[in-house]
Image (cartoon, rainbow, N blue to C red; front, side, top):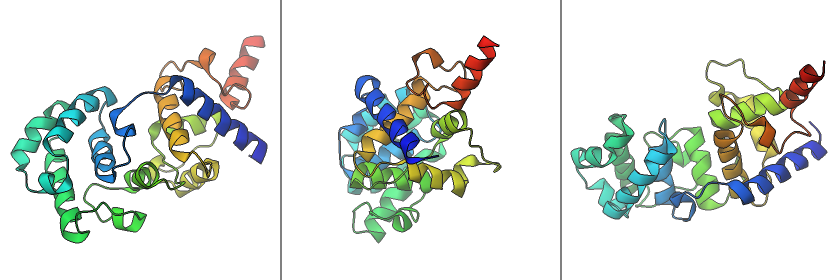
Length: 222
């Protein structure tokens, strides 16, 4: 993959996001606590459900200190629409760890973030990027699918999200400037256009470089 293709990919995602990106409440803040909570709530959960729960959650526990003192049962009732009962205890444990180990402040580095309950590489990178403006890649199922289709790059791992080669590729594609909007664009593009089922190829802005599109076009013309 040469630099020209990388620039074209970055530009296409940036332009698409500017026109069609989703408006989500946790994208309107730079507060590391609010961003971390959003990422924890989003794990294995539908975005639309999280939007409703997130607003109520932040109204009740606007600071990590308040969350750390709350009963798990109360937290569980608020996030019940999301399912996954373990999330309530994990959210409280994460808040307690931040208060106890980091003086009530969400840490800025990947190594420190990974010490928090429920935080893996994706959430650590997301917090670094979205809260602390670091040029860090994020890699989830949606983004991996884009890489599969556009660049025909696949993982041999049972859990592609843990594949260091995919992470390295994702990091290579990240622009040094405007990283947040680029990453948001990738996440939204994978969710709304390059979907797992019935991708909207007719509305895709990556036709010029997408290997899957070129193969489909060739098949239609043959």
